[in-house]
Image (cartoon, rainbow, N blue to C red):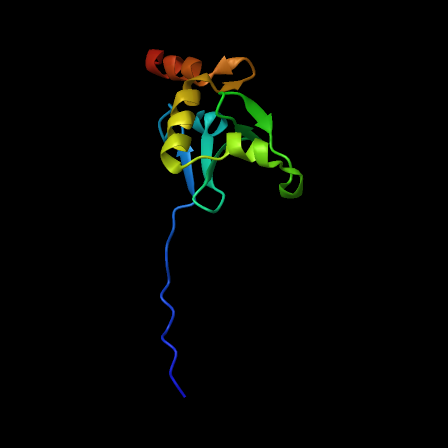
Length: 111
């Protein structure tokens, strides 16, 4: 009987947080965009259940069984593209009419 080799544990990054606010900023969590690995070398840019499309618009993400191929083609990216899109969108994330850029400026103006 041939002895099977022991499996080797692997590690893989599956999520990035993208924000213009610093890690310690109390407002950061509400302005974060997440880049999440979705398999097959493809990544999604997400925020509160919405996905960023290649056109820069956010849309609700349907459950997997309801996602059409054309939607996936415009909402799944290689990592570099996903991070670029998230960085471009980060200053414009809005909460209650205030953008991340507004929060950043308030932070700079604080004594």
